[in-house]
Length: 211
Image 1 (cartoon, rainbow, N blue to C red):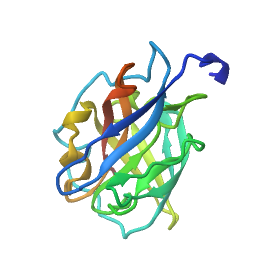
Image 2: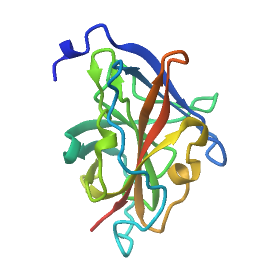
Image 3: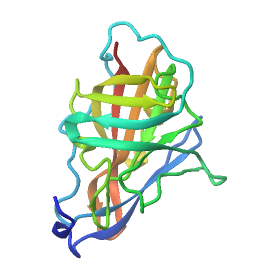
């Protein structure tokens, strides 16, 4: 889709997610709404349940991720490390790099035991950004993370959910997870509130490493 489709109908919006508990991080994902038609929303809402693998895949040593590929929604993007600032706000890639996703590097790296967290913008003034179609993912879809050590870790989606900002699933995203490697993808979504200039929800994808 060309940039001309979005025209002047886009309106600035900042999506903020309060993350409380042991993580102590607030996730802020900046995006722009497209008017009446916003980003795709998940048709399912799974907050728990069994993982894609009956037995956990052995964990790998720590290594920085450098690329994410999600074939089902056409995502092929570089990854950059992000962290929290002194105010407890999670950094995201700059808006002038909408096709780049951010890996929360104080947490697990993809392939290590625990939940690796990757965040990305949903859209920008010029149109869709890296995670615009995140809500289209379905259980069984694959996410591939390429690491700096040359290894590629494949994750299978377990569930996709839309969560109100006031009920962000902190433990689900930042918690220790199971014994094997897991992945969480996060962006903004839901209804766009014109008055508050904010998205109502966040989209969270759960995935488990598969052999």
